[in-house]
Image (cartoon, rainbow, N blue to C red):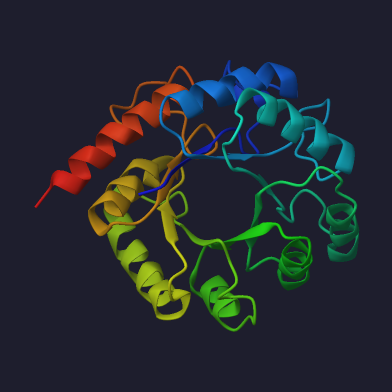
Length: 244
């Protein structure tokens, strides 16, 4: 079971003491997450104001800093449409990257997602297909690239814990009909983060955790950082895999 650390997301850096707009400073946070057991890292490169950025210089500075601190760990970035809403401009920025990530997430419901995925594939960058809901799942399944993805991310949104299982069952079942041998990574956001990770462990799926998805430990206390979240996730996975 792959455990990925989603290190920062689009959270404002003021939301947690470990979040920062400076890649060299943040590289230590990434290294600690890897040392705690993360086998893959997902990061949102930032500009100097702490905003998500797809600019080649920002992507390069973040990738170089984290690679220096975490040699050999696969490293991915976001391509979220909220960063650059215009699809043509977003695509040009991605095509301008010089320092390439190992993989990048593509939210398949977003306008322009197919072109972004095609550009990533052409450059040898692995695609994480982000599936947020049924419509996004249908769009991904209809894509000629659906079976060329590195993994499928079934992303349960911030919903009450008691609703997570039903939502996950529906999306995972659909993804399995089209994923073939492509791994499925199930994860949640805020209220759904820990319930989704527990389901992933019981169902034998990959998962992720980190300050992007939640600031809190399973007991509801504030995590000191990504490493503590990863360590807690490893324990939860062991418990989930051992459950009958």
